[in-house]
Every structure is written in C-alpha cells, then in structure tokens.
Length: 325
Image (cartoon, one colour):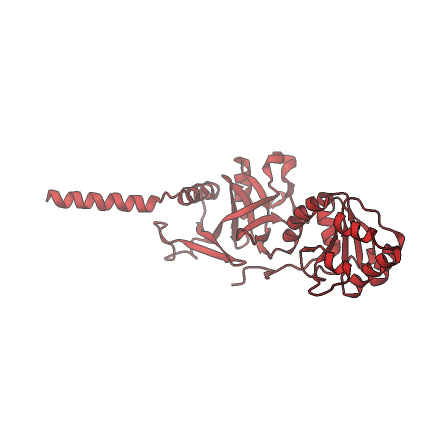
C-alpha cells in the first residue's frame, strides 16, 4: 500500500516561495533580479561570504543564500566603488544566485545591474543580521522539510492530533463534524498535508491552502467551519499523534485484538505513528469511540496501561485463590 501521494526526503522550493512564505516574518522584499525568483534554493541555509569578498574562494558555499550583514557591508564600503562591484560580481561568477542585505542597507543601481545581468536575486530586510539569521533558519527548515500528502481527515482531539482514514463513505467527515461540535478542532478535511520536523522527528499536519477551514458533508455540501462553530473550531497545524483507520466490520473479522494489547504503528516519512483500527457498523458511535481512543492514547503515553493493570489484577487474584485451595 502506498501511503502518500508525495513522499520524499526533502522538498525543493524556489526563491519566490521563500520570499512569499517568509516575506512578512523576515520583513523581506525583492530589491533586484525579480526574473531569477523561479530559481531553486539549492541548500536551505545562509552563508556569510566574508572571505569570498576578500578574494578567497576556497570552499565558497555558493549553493546557500549569501547574507550581507553589517560586517560584510562595512568591509565593502572600505573598498573603492569599482572594487566593490568587482568583488560582488565575482560571487555571481562563482554561481551565487541570491544575496540578502540586512539592516535596511540601500542597494545601489550598479549592484542591482550586475545581479540582473547574472540572473541572480537581491533581497533586502530591515532586520538586524543576527535576528534575520535566526528567524530565516525556521523559514528555510519549514520550506525544505520532507513532506507528504495523505487522504485523511485530521482533528485535534483532547489536545492530540488524530488523523481519520479509511475508504470513502465510512463517515470520516461526519465523525470529524461530531468531534468539532463537542469542542474539538478541525485541522484538515479529506486531504491532510504532513511535514516532518527533522530536529524532533515528528510530523505536523495541516490542510491544503485551498481547502483550509472547509469541510464537505454529504447531503449538506461544503461548509466553512469557523463561520458556523467559531474560530476555536479550527486549528491551522497540529502535531500528528495518532492514526485511526476506519474499516467495515466485515473487513476486521478475526483480525483485531479485542484486548487492545497489540500495538500497531504506521510509518510515514520515516516516523512511526501509533495506529488504531476501528470497525464501522450501523449504530456504532464513532465520535465517542474516537474521543475515547484519544484519551486512551494519552493514558498510555503517560505510562498507564489498563491492559497490563487488569492482567496483573487477574494474576494476583488467581494466585490468591490457589493459596486458599
């Protein structure tokens, strides 16, 4: 079975996506070279090209975004204007494709012209270099993180990110709607976008931008969740903690462990996510079952295992009864 429509080690993105995604947070604008915005970011990191500006190009990290901070600009200002342009042009000649000026530095027409000629992009921000460098890391990691898209409805239930999956017509959206009415929140309906946080090896779920905050309910149509239930009824992104798979009762005959002792997991983007299979049949309260499953998972995560406790009690009772004999 193929889990994802798209599943890969890293997600490529362009300079345009970087500007659009991080423009507001990084206070970043395009100063020159707009036609180069479709170029792909080859390595999602920044590099301060101090040594390269002095004329030493050994191990020059041209695949990264080049950050021109106060130190770099101060050095350039110490050079004659013609030499400044020569040093910057040398970066472009060595395949640098994006320069980012911090601290609101003005970009001269001559610098803009050599960037345009090289097909490179110059970005500008008012942020201090250290602030921009720190914030930029989060933007780049998010854009370049491994991603996948799965067919499933994700809801925040009791503080957990729970994805409901299964064949069409089994009631995923209707169950999610019932959960929302009980005070839980919709993350994504029918189609869930996942990204992997490499630092914590966890997955985060969100909706596709086009369908965010909307649900399709058979017999009713498309609804806008926050307009009906309020802004607290939606959650833009949530860590994925549990996958619940709906199957028809017939599909699960003889397959399920009725005690819940068998622990199943689902591997997505290399991350193991706990999984439960819930049989669907007429009259079963799926909303209540999903809510209970989430609470049960929280207890397990906290170290309480009801199956182990019951087993220990039954064993202790059997031992006590054997001694009475």
